[in-house]
Amino acid sequence: MKKFVKKFVKISLIFIGLFIIIGYSLKYQFDKDNSDKFIWLRNIKKTNFDYAFIGSSRTLNMVDINLIDSIYGTNGINIGMGGSDFRTLYMILYTFLDIQENNINDLYIQVDPFMLYKDSIYNKPNYDYYFYSFINDKNINSCFPKNNNALIYKYFPIIKYIEFNKVYNLTHFIRSFNSSSVWDESKGSSLIYNHLPFKPVNNQIDKHHKKHLVLNFEDKELLSKIIGLCRNFNIQPTFYSAPIFNYQISYKPSYPKFEDEINILSDSLDIKYLNFMEYNNNNESFFKDMIHTNVKGSIELTKAIIKALKHNNVYKEQAGDL
Image 1 (tube, rainbow, N blue to C red):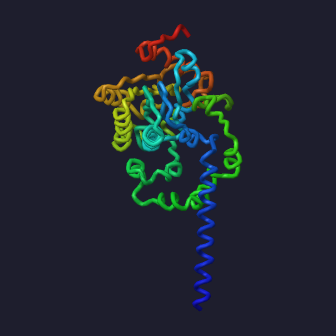
Image 2: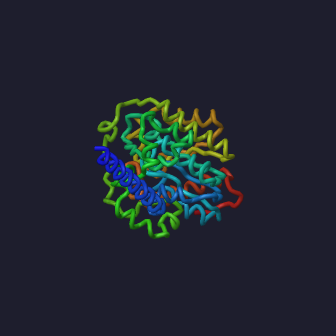
């Protein structure tokens, strides 16, 4: 019996050791997959940026960093991620600044009704698995629910790769051997070129919303934490909102106080607010869907942003007529 127990323990330890070795080998390889926006951002270290835009897909898909840089001769980056809420955006910004030691002069923070009100149409995917390796950092740890498996995922990464195999799949493993990335060329932006013809949806709010939603305290606090990061790293923050098709009719009835509340918040924090929600918002040719512009609309929005930057003298070198 003792021989059996010893043999069992020995074999178990061998298998555990193999799982640990395989897990860390996978981690080493997946951490080189620059086709993944999160990992691409994580691999940028000790770099200076004149500005950055942060937000959800309405930043990722709608702000053309290359166009801004071509006008101003600056070095910008789009650190937006589709579906991100302010909790995820805080973790993205914190790791980008504090852990990876990058510098940003100006940060443009997307503030939309969808991000500040609960029971929204906005689907917020969970991206926590990208941050488990930073679980020992108290600022990242504080963003996770109290009961989580982050430590297990950190020290036994193979479990994470098995559980989240839809993200860490064979395609991404193969891509990890390619050092080049589309994100390098686009500077983090992903404009929408191909899409089905846009068909506006009438009475959108009646299908998805409770009327007169209330500004969510938790999201407001997380936004304040992002502003706190900006203050700590000497970054000048600016709020901005992106276009929404037919905003006054389709969405504003659900968020009647949004603009007043965001103006009060920006004034109290002494932060500029650039509101583009109604910019070209009745032109169907500029939209992919109700809340995302296509490449044509995104270029027009970026031009409007450039003019706003010029008007506010954000950069010394002025843009010409666009």
